[in-house]
Length: 192
Length: 80
Image 1 (cartoon, each protein chain N blue to C red):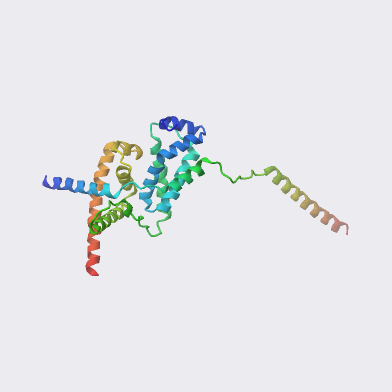
Image 2 (cartoon, rainbow over the protein chains, first blue to last red):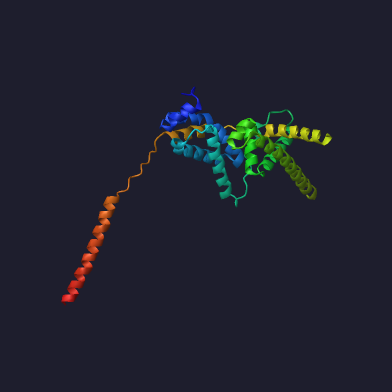
């Protein structure tokens, strides 16, 4: 069954074939987890929300109608809504920093360089999480999921041109935000 | 024009940083496996269906007995 296209597997899953849903789960669980992980910033909530996404998808698979929108877009929309609810519910709670990313850094003979790179990454992730939700979504889909502008456009229900424009504006605001954060950090260091 | 070129170079640098920082993460395989099981296997806890008819009979009987006792007590006091 793993050789079948999404549409064929979906049709079976919609008729209550749990094995078919299992195939869809295997295909998308890592992508959805990654998306939620970068939006929430921690493993615990990423696992909890990923489970909720697939339970919701499983519960409504019989109502899913293929209107030319890929199944992945449907899953991303569920994820986007659940993450939005999560942020709303936790708005009063202090933000949780991203888990240790040291596992992703290439091993180098220069620990100082690695440390510097690590700090740079932490700063960038911090700034990304300050961006509006749709800009965060765009960056995650492009850089974590490696999706093209056309694919991102389908998921975000926009035209390809609108995505290109949004991407350009996102880079500009990201750079401004990085400069601001660096200035604040420098001032803090000088006052110490 | 020079400003635009600089802007593009800065964009490219920023894209490189993004590519480095936003690397895909691997979910815990145990979590992936456990969630698959929870999704596909039927739940072990069964919810008992509501016994609406039985509840209706009990409530009606209770009301009937209550009204009967009130009527009985009133009738006794009336005779006295």
